[in-house]
Figure 1 (cartoon, rainbow, N blue to C red):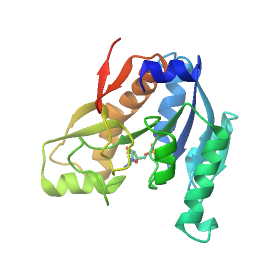
Figure 2 (figure 1 turned 90 degrees about the vertical axis):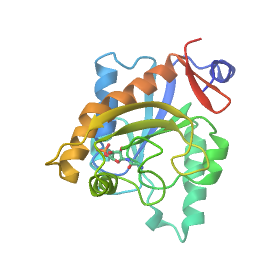
Figure 3 (figure 1 turned 180 degrees about the horizontal axis):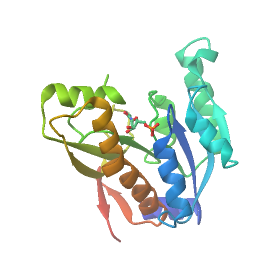
Length: 220
Ligand code: GAR
């Protein structure tokens, strides 16, 4: 988000909605960073999940953050879900939408309305191991199958493509010989995701990031 865009919206405290699908460890990392002062000027308005069983919803509710379930199963078809999800987001009207392990594609109309106000964490070094079919544990399975020696995580703005928006930050993580997908997933989370995502939110909230010609620049 550009400084100009934030000033135009005239916010002080960045109001965010966090979207989650599962365990919610990235959501937890965000909440911990807020508690510890590593994220400032941010308020979580709500947490939205597509999955009734998501532990992330419990994590939100335990902090008295509004926890909202928006399951595609409760709608007649994908288009109806997209419309309802977009309408809900417009009613909340956050300054920033954070996809923190959200494994459902964002409706195109939401991307259009919230252009450059949606960020995503992906568990690889984009443009490797991303795009259709690459999510969650599957990413780490593919990394091990291919035998690469270095992987990592990426935070990026969301555009109409799949994992194709401007890159905000990346961090490399070594692949070890005895890794299983689960071990590698945990190391990528610990060494990269739980650091990068809170940092990116703090950078946006404190206007340290500018988006110029499709690239993210730091500083004023
Ligand atoms: C995380 O590894 C996140 O990067 C990944 O899902 C996991 C969710 O974990 N996201 C994607 O694959 C998006 N394409 P969490 O629920 O414990 O944060």
